[in-house]
Amino acid sequence: MADTTETTNIDILVNNVEITKTFKVSPDKDSTESKKVTLTSTFNNVPLRAIFLEAMKPEVIRLQGSLRKAFDTLEDGLEITKAYKSTMQAVVITPEMAEKAFLADLAKMTVEEREAKLAEMVDQIETD
Image (cartoon, rainbow, N blue to C red; front, side):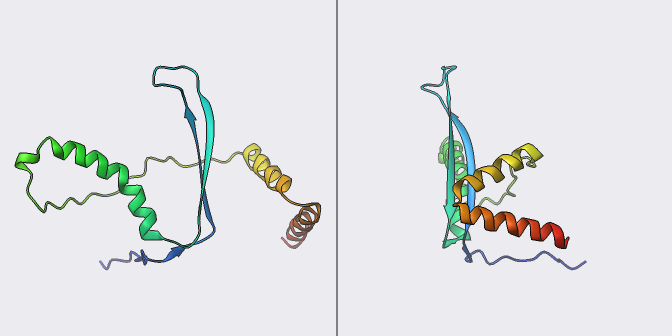
């Protein structure tokens, strides 16, 4: 059977992509107190290769630590290949979450932009 997997050019530039991650920060590892922080990274003119290399950094650090213990028996030039497995689960967006995001977007707009956006939405509803 022929391989029908599509190959992606890893050097293509990524544009207009935002990734948001919310996390907690506590004063130390034993603290029960924490504060929520949201980080949004915007990708414009970034090669896909750079994004993947950045994503590999934690794995490289873990491997360096574990291989260091076996350094004396480690073969120089060793090549390791492993399949990437996402730790993320499917994201479920509830109607409440969508509404909150929509309202947040509207709040960032000028009155004119809001009116144009709402008019565009009404047009979409009428043509569907």
